[in-house]
Image 1 (cartoon, rainbow, N blue to C red):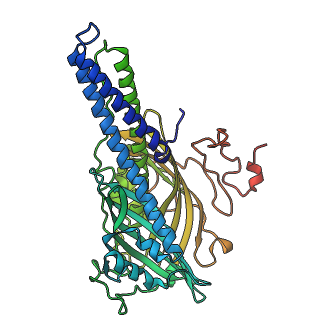
Image 2 (image 1 turned 90 degrees about the vertical axis):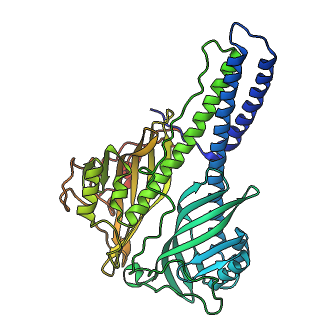
Image 3 (image 1 turned 45 degrees about the horizontal axis):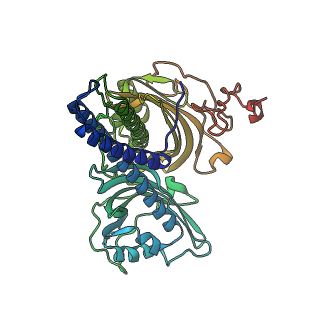
Amino acid sequence: MTYRSRSAGTLAACILGGALALGASAATTAATATAATTTAAASAEERSLEIRQLRESVARSAQALALLTSHEQIERLQAAYGYYIDKGLWDSAAALFSRHATYEYGQRGVYVGRAHIRKALALMGPEGLEQGELNDYPMLQPIIDVAPDNRTAKARWRSDVMLAKDGKGQWGEGEYENEYVNEDGIWKISKLHFYVTFFADYERGWGAGDIPLAGPSVALPPDRPPTEIYRSLPGIYVPPYHYGNPVAAAVPSIEQDVQGPADLPADLVALQASANALAHRVELLEDRAQIEKIQRAYGYYVDKAQWPDVAQLFAADGTYEIGGRGIFIGPKRVLEYLVTGLGPIGISTRTGQLLNHQQFQGIVDVAPDGKTAQGRWTAFIMGGSGRTGLWGDALYENTYVKESGIWKFKTVRAAFNMYAPYQGGWRDGAVPNTRPDSFLPPPDLPPSQLYLTYPSFYVLPFHYPNPVTGRPAPPPNPAAGGVAPMSLYAPR
C-alpha cells in the first residue's frame, strides 16, 4: 500500500482557495437553478438541496482548516518564544504575550501583564547573553487543542533545559501548560506556566545533583503566589493535563460524503466531487494531528507511570513490543507488562525517580483511505532512581488504526539504540538490551527481531521510502544481533 504524507503548512493555501472557489461556484449555480425551470435531469428543489449540502460541506472543511491553521500558528508562536529565551531576548519574548497575560515559572509566583512579565524574564539576567552563558529552552512535544470557536487554545509542551554561567553548567527539564488567545487574527500567549521537573548540576546529573527550586523574588515580587506548591526532583509532581485521554475521551470523527440524486447535471456532479475531495484532504490532515497527539500523550503518560492511560491508547488487538522483551497483545496485557515489569501505577510515591520518555521527530503517514497510518519516532530517555541517573534513546515504528472514528495504537514497537549511566555515559559503557526473561511477566510472543544495542547496532526498518529519491529503505541489516561495522549494511 502507498502512503502519502500531507502537511498543513503546504496545503493550507490550496485547500482554502479550493473552498472559496467552490463556495463561489455553488452560489452561482444556485442563482441559475432558482431562475431555471424544472428539467428532466433534476428539479429546482433537488438542485437547491444539493447546493445547500455542498455549501455546508465546504463550510465544515473551511472551519476545520481554520483550526488546523491556528494549530500551526500556535506551534510557531511557542517555538519563537523558545528561540528568544535561548538568547536572552526578553523584549521580543514579552511581545508574544497578550496585554493581560500571566507568567509562572516553577515556584516563583505569578506575574500579571505584559510589562511585569518583561521584568520577570529579566530575573534570568540582563537582555542578551554574555560570554560563557547558555540559556537553552527548546520547545518540544506539543499537544495543542484549539477551541471550536477558534478564539482560544491550550497546549502542553516540554523543555530539556541547558544552562551555563560563571563556568558552571546545569541540566533542567519541565513541562508547560499554556493558554493562548486569538486577538484580531493574531495568536498570543495568554498564560504561560512552566512546571519544573528538575534542575541539576551538570557534572553530577539529575540522579545526584538536584538543585532546589527558587521561591518568589524579593527584588521583583510576583503579583500572586504560586498556584500550586510542589518540589522538584527528588520530589515528584504531575502537572495537571488540559486534555483527556486522546482515545478514551475522543470525539469520533467520521467522514461523510455529500450524496445527491443519480440524475444530477454534470456541473453539480463535478462540484459534489470537489467538495468530497476537499473534505477528505482536510480529514487526513486532522488524522495526522490526532495521531501526533496520541504518540505525544503516550510519552507524557509513561513519564508519570500512568499505566492505565497508556493501555487505553491501544486497539483491542493492539500489540506492544519494547526493547527485547517480546510482544504483549491487547490492552490488558499491555497494562500487566507495565505494572508488573515497571512498577505500580503512578509516580507520586516514587521519590527520586525519573521516567521521562520524550517523543520527538515524528514522521507520520496516513493511508489514502484514512483508516490506517504508520509513524516513526525517536524517544529521548532521562531516567534513574536511588541517586543514579540513566539516559538513552530508542526508535519507534508504530502503526495506528481508526476504529469508529477514533485513532488508536495498532502496534507499538520500540527498538532500543542506547542506554547508559549518566556518569561516564555511552563513552564508558552501556546497558545491554532486555530479553524475554529479563523480568516478569512473560510475553505472549517472542521478540520480532533479536538484536543488540550500542556499541552494536540495529537499523529498525523504515516504513517509508527516501522522501527525495523515492527509493525504498534497505532491508533489515544482516548483522542485527551482533557486533559489526556499519559498512556491512551499506548498499552494494
